[in-house]
Length: 80
Image (cartoon, rainbow, N blue to C red; front, side):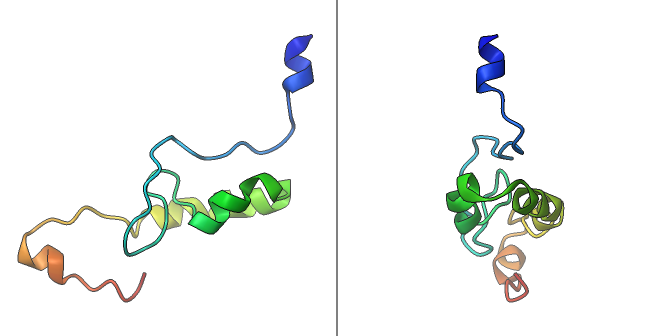
């Protein structure tokens, strides 16, 4: 009975407790949401949350580890 009281029909946060904003892309490296989306998450409707969640997989592709010494530092971030 207690579980029913606390149960919600809302879309859960995609947070995975790895909360660090990527310095160039300005999105969380854990859940791929922007700082603005993270801050406003509790106020979003279910429809707004669903639209954000649908975009997250494509955002993860722009995050990468810098590798290759000089080549990694020279990579172009202008398309982020």
